[in-house]
Image (tube, rainbow, N blue to C red; front, top):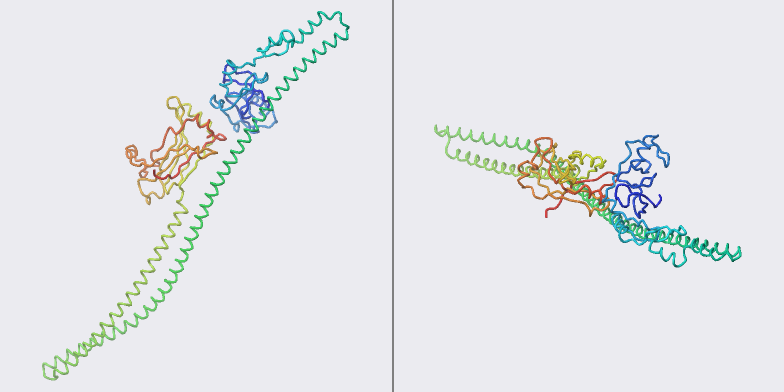
Length: 510
């Protein structure tokens, strides 16, 4: 791409003058006419056209005039360049070809060119060569003007031989050529100096990028380490659950054996109890019969006493036997209690793993495409975009972004909705998890723009039930309509490939 370009629509002073940018991105320059305008169109083949050239190509075969590739109008990206963005790039003074080495923004170079630059050039009326205005007097007085020297030589060279006269004129022309060569060498030196400065900036940028990549790799390694540690913790939890499950199985097997044995023993014991009870009943009946005979004088008190002693003995044995049975029943109850406790621990472990697997999301990132269209919509009244419903800390949620003018300044807003979800009946309400809404910088997370919410008891929140259980599809949005200026987003590099990213994450209370 040629280094000499033209501005259009930015400066009355510099528009349509040949200028040389030091670091302008190629996508800002029309590939056909080398003009930098406020709007360019990026074709699918990566060539860019200004609005005038693009309209001319559209009326034709819709092929790139550089490489001949066909393009579809729907896939052409419209790029906007504003005055503030242009001021981020440096340009050389318009008099750079005449020796001026000033480099700065468009506004700085304009003021320098109009007020301070001493490299303005004029055309010598004598020899028609290009001479700095500050040097025009010396150009005449020190006999640097070739035409004047030749003319003066002609005035008194009529007496000289023809060969000497031609030689004198040739020397004058050679001197002029040498002066032009000197000017070209100066220009080449300026170009080399510019290249050297450019290489130094590239080297510095490469160093910064390498440092950023190193930091990102370190961060990714740390995240990877956290994931590995979490995975190991889950593996240990699963192994503990397996051991608990094996222990529960063994206890259940033992319990089953005990139940069978207890069942058989209880059946045998029931027969023994029935036998002893029947014996006691028989002895009671015998004592009652002897009491009846006592009334008629057929038996004496000694016989009755012996029967009562036997009855008391059998009764004590029955009481002792029943106490032993009671202890055995208590041991069975203890076994049942232990098995139930282990089953409860196992159920809690499974529940924890289930929550980790399904409801562990504490951060969500949303990419918004076609930002230029979104911005154009916002230039009218306001424009909105909604994300899909996602799970955030077990709650169903949705993000909303909005572009709207405040005091004639376009602002970018970010909001958070709570939505109805299938697990609402099992969640704690109102929602009280501190969170941070943020605009993602594509290359440096330290430049992210954030807005945190840690207070959940404001009048506005309570009045509109923002954080209570939703009774409709979604609650009223909560966030900020003035997260940042749209112009600042574009100037500070938040817009990449006509897309921006926003997100929400859990934050710690201050």
